[in-house]
Image (cartoon, rainbow, N blue to C red; front, side):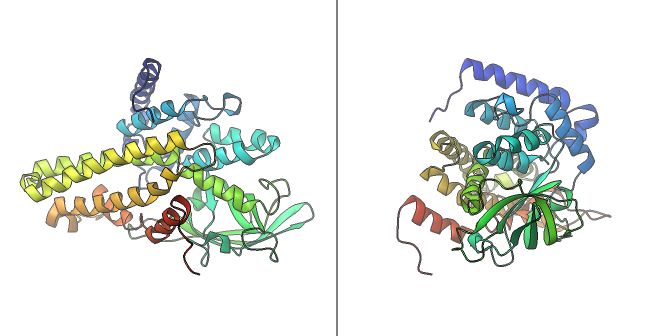
Length: 392
C-alpha cells in the first residue's frame, strides 16, 4: 500500500481543488454540504444540474477508460478526487449508483453494445440509476429473490416486488436481480436485468424514514418490460454479476462516502469547542477516539483498494462495511451528546431537523442496510477467515 502521492498526483490534486472552488460558487454555492445521508431530498433540480456541470468539466466517472467517457484515472487520483470533493463540501451525488456500481459492472461484464448504449448517459450526468436487489424476504439472503422474469416476444417480462430501493422515484433505470429459472438452485437461476423505470408496469411507493424523508421506496413490477438484450451476462449468471456489483460498491465509491464523514466529525468538534463540551475530559476522549477512527477508516480503505483486483474483493475488504457503519452510528450518538438538550429541540416553524439531528436518525440504519452487522460478521468468518459456514 502506498500512502504518499507523487508530484504528478499533487498537480492533479490542485487541478481538482481549483475546479471545485471555482464551480461550487454562484448558482451552485448553496449545494455545499447538502444532499448527504438524511438530506437526500435537498435541492434535487440543482443537484441534477450539478451532475451535468461535473460531466462538462470531465469530473464524472474519472476511473473509467477514456473511450467510455472517463479519464482513466489511477486509483491514487480517484482517492485524491474524493478527498478534495469532500473537503470542498461537494453535494451528495445523484449519479452515484450509475457511476460507482452499474458503470463498473458493465465495464466488467457487459456487452460492447450495452457499453456503447448505456455508459454515455451516466458519464454525461444525465441518467440516474437505482439498484433492485432487496425484497421483503430477500435482504441479507439475497439469493432468495422471488421477482420473476420470463422471455416473451423478444422482451423480458417482470413481476414481483423490490424494497429499500434508494432513489427509485428519481431514477431513469434500475438494475434488478430477478429469478429467470424457478427450477434451478437459488444461486443459479438468476438474471441481472437493466430495466427502464418510466413505464406503466412499474409502481413506486416511497417509504417515509425517521428523518421524514423518503430516500428509498417499494417498487412493484406488474408486467414491466425490458428488451431481451438488456441482460448482463447470460441467464443464470445473475448471482456472479450481482456479486461483482457489490464489490464495486465496496471500492472507491465507499471511500468517497467515508471521506465525507470527516466533515461531519469536524462540525461536531467545532460545536464541542463552542459550547464547552470539549472541556469535559470524557467527552474530549470520545472526540479523540472518533478522530482516530476516521483515520483508521481511511488507511484501511486505501489498503483494501490497493489489494483488490477488478470485481474480486480482497480479504481486507470484508471488514470495511462493519467498521464504517459502526463508526458512523457512534458518531451520530456522539453528536447528540455534544449538543446536549439542544439535540432534542427544533428551533421554530417549520420545525425542520438540523443537519446533526438528521445525521443521528439516519445513522441508526447504517448497521442494518447493505448487510447487517450480524451478516457482516458471518462474511468475515466464512469468506475472510475460512471458518465453517453457520448452520442453516
